[in-house]
Length: 121
Ligand code: AMP
Image 1 (cartoon, rainbow, N blue to C red):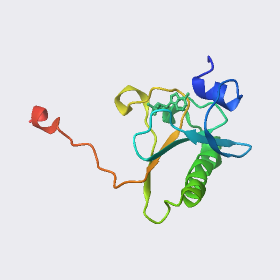
Image 2: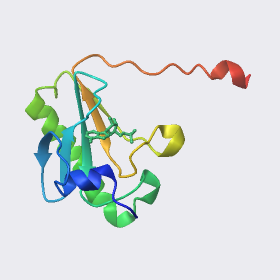
Image 3: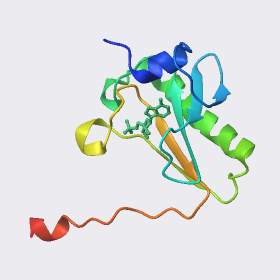
């Protein structure tokens, strides 16, 4: 599979605003923030989508959430709260095919309205 932009960030071939790094996980600020604080938490292992996660990746996926909790403390948003979300494929709004948690914080977050309901009746 061809390198995604996130592989290039992992290899430090292109710059990113890195805020957290371990041997297996990297987090950096999103280039197009959707909240006052918006970072991406990614495994260094290339996994394209949630559908491609294997049982042996379970611990790695757990590390993404442990990283989120650590970053929340570092950023001072743990108590007020935040949202983590991972998009999958077209309908989920995924644009980079290297799994990543979006972490959003710094304001009270809304939830998108489900306006398609009317069409289904
Ligand atoms: P998704 O649409 O869920 O795949 O999310 C991809 C995210 O990557 C988007 O929020 C983009 O703004 C973000 N993004 C793309 N390129 C970069 C980059 N070079 N540095 C930081 N964030 C990026």
